[in-house]
Structures are given as C-alpha cells and as structure tokens.
Length: 360
Image (tube, rainbow, N blue to C red; front, side, top):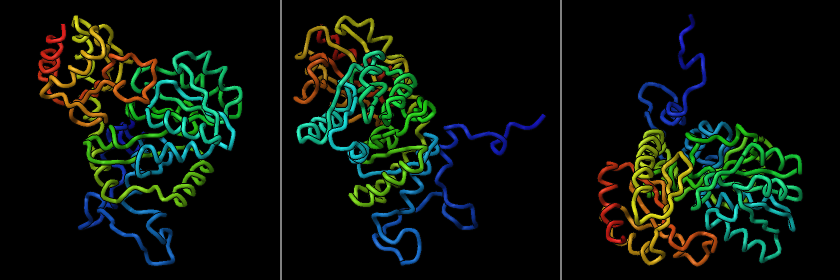
C-alpha cells in the first residue's frame, strides 16, 4: 500500500499555514523569510520599484493563496482591498450586498452611490430567493457569510450560480470564517477578500488586506490597480502577519472551542435574550434583555474582555455595535458582538457572567 505522505497528496491547511512562504532550504539560509526594507531595486528584474513587489509580501501572499486555493494580493488594509474590488464595477453598475455587513464596506458603497459611481442594492443575505432575484441586473454580488455583526449565513453556491448566469462577479468577504473553515473559491466564487488585520494576522498589531482569485485575468487587473493606487502593505506588517499565520489553525481551533462553550452557557443566562452563532468560528453576538443601556454597561464591567471595535485577535473583545451611528438600524440596539479569544474558557465565562449577573 502506498504511504499517505505529503508528496502523494495535497498538504492539509494547518501544514500549509506553517510551511508556505518559507525560503529555499539551503545551508545557512534563514528558516523565516526576512523583512525586505526596500523602495528601490536594481533594474532589469521583475520588481524594479517598491510599489510593484516585495519578497516579504510575496511570502505572505503565497501562504494566504495556498490556504484559499488561489493567487493572492495583499494590501495596506482590508478597506483598501474592498475599494480595489469595488473599482471593478463600471459607472452606474449595480452591486448587490448584505444589508448587514462590515461597516466599512457598507459605508464605501454608500459613498460611491452618493457620488453616482454605482447603485447599491442591499439585501437580506440569508434570504436566498431575494438575493437570487437581485442578481438579475447586478455587475457584482458581494457576500459575507457569516455577516458582521448579525452572523447570518449565505447560500454561497446557489447565489454564485445565479450571479454568474446574470454575468456578475461574486466576491466573498471571508474574514470571519477564515480559509480554515470555509474556502469560497471552491464554490466558483470569483474573488475572496480578507481583512488580514483580524484572524490572519491575529495579534491586534497589523493593518492588512488581501484579495484571492483563481482567475489570472482578474489577478492581473487587480495587480495593476494596486500598482497604480499604491495601496501596498509595509514589509514589516507583511512579516508580522506571516508570523501570525503560522499559528492560525491553533488560534482558530481554540477560539472556536471557546465560543461554542460560551454559547451554551450564554443561552442559559437570564440577562441574554438572544444568542446568535452560526455554529462555527469565534464570533458570537448576543442581545441583552434589558436593552442598550445594559449592553453599554456590560462592556464597562469586565476585567478580561476588552471593549474594542476590532476582532480576531488572541484576546477576547466585545462592543455594542449600534454605538456607531452608521450601523444599520436593523441591528438590535442591545446587540453586543463578541470576538472570542484563546484565553481559558472558564476565566472568560467567570468574567462575562459576573458582569451579566449585575444586569439581571
């Protein structure tokens, strides 16, 4: 019987996270890719100038692309990646997008619509029939699954098929799920977007974005846009993100296990009227029974949980999303989004439950 070795089958995602983007194995070569601090390169090669490429970016792009199953381009932030994708839409084109989504994406769509660049058609992404019907005149269909912060799930395969029949591109923001839990390119999605600031880098110290695709023409177009706009990552940020990705599988596994245990306990607490959890990942949203004031108080009463607007780091953070004026009114006023970290789950629960007890 042939041995089940890495040379005879594709590597598992956890192995890719650890091994991709490494330098060649040569005597005295570094095990990790170095930080290349260079704006200028000697002429005659492929790089030429700092906006066009960097060996540290390329190692990170190899790793993210290997996990998503496509080619990757990294950007200076998640919103820079979002803007680059939206730039594919011609003037007056329609973008179908979730009514509940990352606030920066919704705000970009609103800004572009106000300036006459495109038409934004916001839908309930969990209502597949509604989304499919909206695809008929779309140029781009933007999906989040799970959505931020409502944690709704989209039928990616069905929606993608309908969008392609209508001639539209499909993009999935895979920030919450990560490529360890979901690989949308396998569902024929055209583009995958990440805020690498979140789970990929994982330590709340990097701003970074990424786009992945299997379409060589789309890759070339997006690469050209990045070259022109200059929304490139810094080499130190790329190096930090790559170092963070070496433990992505461990962090996601622990955060998910913690989240699943906390969900069980939260559903039994009288201060919580609703728990939203898609069944996977480290993101949980709860609605407080006593309303918005109780939700605000919760974020001020804990010692371990940190009140912060970002997510996906090793530490547990939470916030009442409607404290932002631009958050949709269809998000409950008392909803608190929890980004569950990798701390001991009993310590997290004791801290959270103590604060919740005071709100009953």
